[in-house]
Amino acid sequence: MIRKLYDTEKIPYPLLLLADETAEAIDRYIHDCEIYLYEKNDETIAVYAVQKITETSIEIKNIAVDTPFQNQGIGKQLLHHAAQTAAQRGFHWLLIGTADQAAGPLSLYKKAGFTEFKRIENFFIDNYPQPIYENDKQLKDMIVLRKYLK
Ligand code: ACO
Image (cartoon, rainbow, N blue to C red; front, side):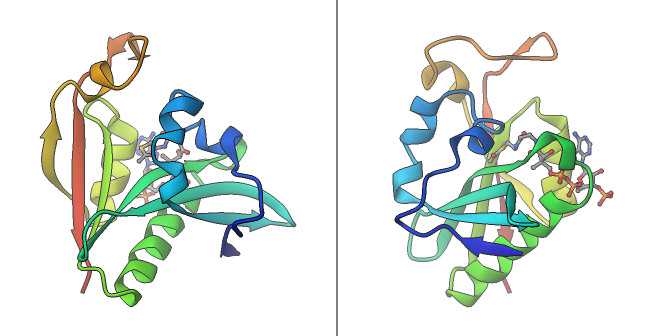
């Protein structure tokens, strides 16, 4: 089941930290986000957070599935839920950003109908105190993808 996190509930940092490097980076957007939880047997196993960007666009700022549950289609379900909910709310565009070297997330988003929209140069250098490495490569640019919501 996917449900919204109530304002009185704890922000699920351990899950959010799977998708972002530091709690400080998460704190720069999470308080302006709506957070949705994926629950299975009363346990939260995945999360996504969306932030309104303009009257017509909303962005998934964080999406994460707990490690033992990855590659079982949950990420895909969360993207579908985010797109449906945003469309119902009248948004035209759903955005999502990831590192240009994040082959896994990039291919997931493209399969879900997102196309590359813009590159934010040096995002991972300018916004984090330490260099971030994935598969021995330093993350540098962010790719923002978008999906048109019919
Ligand atoms: N490499 C290649 N393809 C992948 C990968 C990967 N690492 N991960 C998923 N895919 C593909 C799957 O093969 C699948 O394709 P198919 O439908 O043709 O079979 C499709 O994407 C959907 O896969 P899911 O099983 O739904 O993906 P999952 O539930 O694992 O969720 C996610 C994907 C959210 C990236 C998850 O693996 C995760 O939490 N990773 C760690 C955190 C992370 O990197 N989050 C994204 C950061 S960017 C951001 O938050 C805005």
